[in-house]
Length: 131
Image 1 (tube, rainbow, N blue to C red):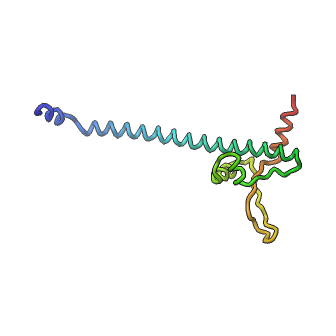
Image 2: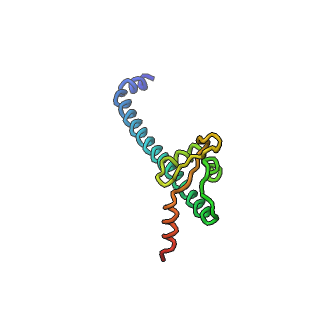
Image 3: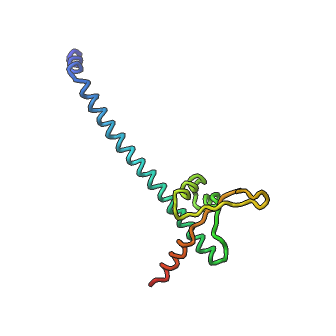
């Protein structure tokens, strides 16, 4: 027992704690970097999926004489995202146009529609025509 006490007494605890704190700092930095990259990639993927879905809707609706606008709630049901994720993706995208839904009686905004800009669909159609 005395040998064990002598062993623990001879250890420099300050250097061990210093090494452990350095390792913890490195691990914290790596974890923070991985989490931030994952968050950024997921947000970018949601924005891309929303843009692609709105392009599909616009192309299909233009062929049938409709306007291609959808509410965030409808897009949430189609894509499996929350409405907050849909709105975040819509407001960070330059390719998604947001238009208010006007109530005819009060002439005030009662909702919001999302659609893709018309030039994106025209560019996509032109790209498909080029051999």
